[in-house]
Image 1 (cartoon, rainbow, N blue to C red):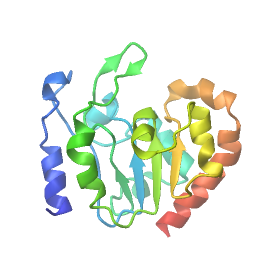
Image 2: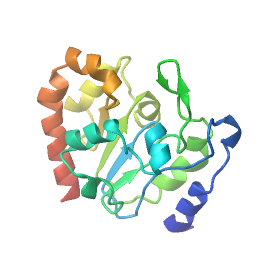
Image 3: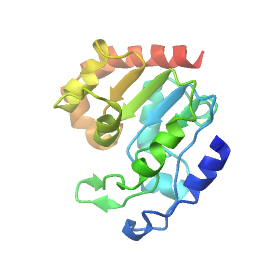
Length: 191
């Protein structure tokens, strides 16, 4: 099956409809030429309403971290955005609910198999990290900090949500040390 047909099937998916607070609206982008994979959690409310991944303050921060603008970020020929869950899962007590469990088993491997030219994978959030990282550390700081000795083609990142301000303040090495490396790796992957 072609990637185009697979994307059409994903965008028409309703397997989790009964568990969603809103109508299903699978949000992702992919092209076989993509060089970078952004593997996130699930679209937030604003992304759901816009129908565009990371169309919110978290996305603004992520693009800043990567050192790229909207034009590059939303060019599927450069960047694939495939979250663990494609639909907005709703809001809980402390933020958005986890991605729906039905998505990844139904679609993830099929989609990733259609992306042969990936040079860098950015793994954002605990659910994506559990899926993509075999040797995930017990804490977020340790997992994100593994960039120093881990696979240079995979980088774990904290969620860029404004709600994580405390984490960023407690871990200044993230901005001072990791972000310059991230920007270099992004630039190299897109070259």
